[in-house]
Length: 406
Image 1 (cartoon, one colour):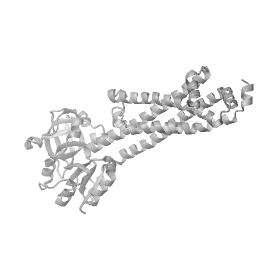
Image 2 (cartoon, one colour):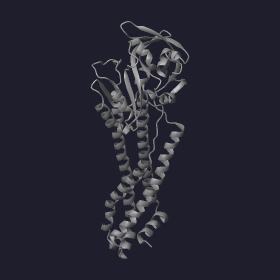
Image 3 (cartoon, helix red, strand yellow):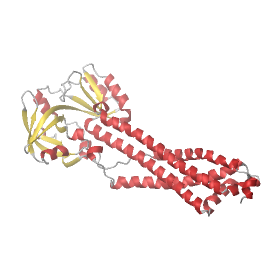
Image 4 (tube, helix red, strand yellow):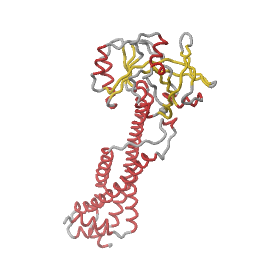
């Protein structure tokens, strides 16, 4: 039988000291709350990053290719994608898919309201999966009927509310050129991305409209929108795409297009690290306090054990075993609390957010098994390592004095 483990078990289970019981419960509660907060913090931050990244890249892609010129307007200059570049894009294993687009500034006029907008034209190869997930009414453009597709349009819920429009309504859009060019459209769908810069800045229509208005050739486009398979490899993939483009073209990643959003997401990582450190400190302080109280309350027992020949290291192991037992209870309860609240939020979305400020209507949760496992392991290792210092107090206990003042 392991002597130290046996004594530690008796102390943990059979203890009748009311004051130390209170301290122990507080220590367990501290570890539980610290772990639960750390689990939820990482899950929420990762959920935020994933959701917001998906919102931005789902609408605009990960990398965009445009003509290399000094044009800084909303309307890109036309170009023809050469066969070599097409071949490289088709055979790039990091690319999920790509599609052609063109943009043109316009003015929406409806119900005595006027709204400036950027018309984004797409073709029949456009991937509608993302837009379909965010449709709140209607459908996407049907390119099967080329005539009707020229008149169909998707607008954001933000724009629909501003202009008092709904699915099925007709209105006139004026395209900005040397002379305003009016075109009549029918709203076939309304979507809600949740990112204000996108919702109030774009509408989706047919690429051929831009080509006709600008008198482009059939194979001319305004840009190429690329979606990659692994967003974590965005920078190296974007660099590789850029390096393999002809000198007449340029590319830029979504991080370059929306630096403010991705800078903000980067700052969230710093906030998470600070919060994790603070919560770990809280848990450690609680355990140190509990261990010191247990040692001081059991000074007589320490003296007796020393009188029977137990070494300082052996007695230290007794209290460290006891601490590990308390930490284990705290971790178990912390996992139950943190994961329970997280799964509850995933299922109900009960904790809401201001979408105009946070781009999301609710607090997102994204759990990763490796994150939870690392938090548990780090908490145990850090707590037990730090507890070695107060446990050295045992070596200062004199057996003679401890027994005399029993």
